[in-house]
Amino acid sequence: MSNILVVRNDEIDAHVSPADCIPLVESAFLAMTGGQAELPRKYHDIGAWAMWFFMGGNVFPSQATAIKTGFATSDALTCQVIYYDHETCEPKGLFEGLKVTNLRTGAAAAVGAKYMARKDSSVVACIGAGKVCWHALGALQAVFDVQQVLVHDVRPEAAAKFVVEARTRYDVETVSVGAREAVSRADIVVSGTPSREAIVQADWVRPGTHFSAMGADGAGKQELAAGIHRQARIVCDRIEQCLKWGDINTSVAAGLVSESDIAGEMGDVVDGRIPGRTGEDQITLFDATGMGIQDAVVAKVIYDIAVRKGLGVGVEL
Image (cartoon, rainbow, N blue to C red; front, side, top):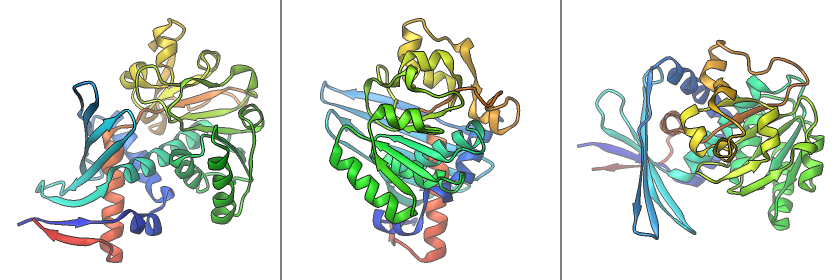
């Protein structure tokens, strides 16, 4: 019989940080570029009210294998991640899927900034005060000397809560401001909203700004104006996904951006095949839609920490 370790979200919050996930998320990008990863993905509509989705990830160098599956409706999302033994294929861990998603998305945002932002970047703008930007900030703290955080959200109460939590958790100056002020003062901008129209306008952006655009994951979603897409050096997590679902998808559909405008994938940058940026004044954009290989390696991080620290409850199947 198999024994599966069920780890609660509060245990993960207490013992696993976005920064813990950076090395393996970075290695997952590299493995994909090197042909050492598999990432099947499937969506299936259930009538007009819901969608079932499946994302698998198998990263050979990290020996990480997992499946994330769940259902999405117009107002709710539920999903789970099952972590498997890489060799025997036995289920080893079960985790709440949104927690895994937020950890891997935050880590990915930091990887994008690590390779594409200016090394002296110290001011971070968070467009959206939700879990994506919160986890991204946690990861960025491990990569940059963050001196100030500027947060914007259409929900003032969410921005106010983010400010208090960031000051308490990271002891960093954090203020709630308008979107224009946040972007115009930032070195690094992380966006993590479900927006279907551009929030960030091109004339707000200073030379040398880096964007980690993490919110778009479907056709029609967009956080950054087309003018930014046209100015920026674009690197994708996976080009074929970003053309359809990434922040650039609306500009692609309008004929303003094409695949030839994309510098490459993040794995190419990590591998050193292409540079993340080619000048200090260059605007850079990491367009990320998310992949099952990121879920797989973050599931491995959670499982390994849980085993080492005695977390979770073992359930015999």
